[in-house]
Image (cartoon, rainbow, N blue to C red):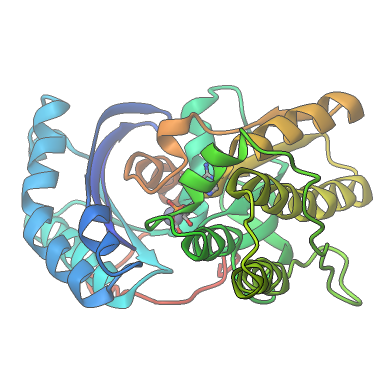
Length: 336
Ligand code: KG4
Ligand code: ZN
């Protein structure tokens, strides 16, 4: 089954053709990040406009790259939630129009479910059940993936997402948006014990995260040093901050893994590209005997191939939308 998939939840307009949920026939991404960088973050109104301008060309390119025409496609999948509402609407309406005019089924895909599905493309042997750490710019979840379309949230952030914390700390250190990537690179050169940062926990819920205090601690440290005229080591600060964030993520993840008695750990989302997170997951999984799956780097960030993968499993489970499908800004991963 060949699915044409569309992603437009944030600042990437993407389209792909994926066969049977695992084989990517084409994947095209038009990133707007350069334009949003001017403003230090994603400007929703600009994102919607750029999606509207790019989507026809991106979808056409995905079909061309797969050497297919619309008549070869069996279904259309699109990200419908969660994300920026105006941005999502562009992809949803385009997919609806295509489905209506071709008579093909329309498949609604949850953005975080698709991040998890990126792993099905990277690892042909991966099947649920597994415990997944989903870490992106907007979300930080520990999810028990019981089946391809059956999930349970075990833990979540109470405030900032991990990616957001990385980006905000990076911005305070003068790095351009999205700074998480550069912070990770610079951290490789630093001493991660140079600065003491808090290890925030959430009272009464051992699997939940809280990153806003950690972000504020870094901001205060920088401002205090500036006021005193002291020089901080950017490398050491990046390394210390990264160690603190990754420590929170892995502590809760492996506590949940132990309590739930799972044997397989999976990571997903933009932050799963983080070098230290990948190394730590590998180290701890090896030590404790868990099987570990992380997406290939090209599939960690937003793309449409992962939408085509999850779309296949949604279709099989009978999740097919009608022409009244609407975009939804916030929706839990276990919505159905
Ligand atoms: O999943 P994603 O592409 O978009 C959302 O759905 O949010 O995630 C983007 C986030 C950004 O916050 C970005 O800074 C972060 O992922 N990110 C990283 C790294 N690569 C991307 N954060 C830390 N280390 C990285 N290597
Ligand atoms: Zn994403």
